[in-house]
Length: 76
Image 1 (spheres, rainbow, N blue to C red):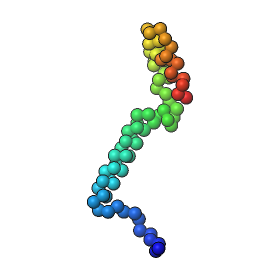
Image 2 (image 1 turned 90 degrees about the vertical axis):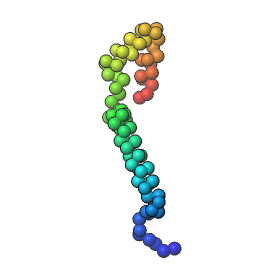
Image 3 (image 1 turned 120 degrees about the vertical axis):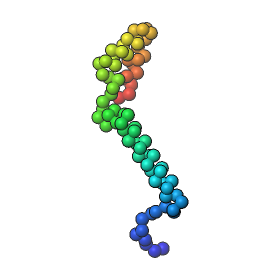
Image 4 (image 1 turned 60 degrees about the vertical axis):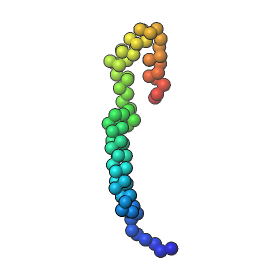
C-alpha cells in the first residue's frame, strides 16, 4: 500500500500497440472533424445551401413526393 508517483507505462511489448492504437484513434478523430466538424461545432449544414435546396426540390418534383425536403428539417 505504498503511494507511487510513477506514471502508468505499459509493458514493453504492448507499448508499440498502444502508440499505434492512439495514433489511429487521433487520425480518425481528425478525419471526422474535417468531414463534419462544421456541422457539429459551427452549425453549418451543407444541405441547407440554396444550391442543394434547389436540387432537393427538383428531386421531389421528379418523384412527386416531399421526402427529400421533409427530411432536412428533422435533424436540428
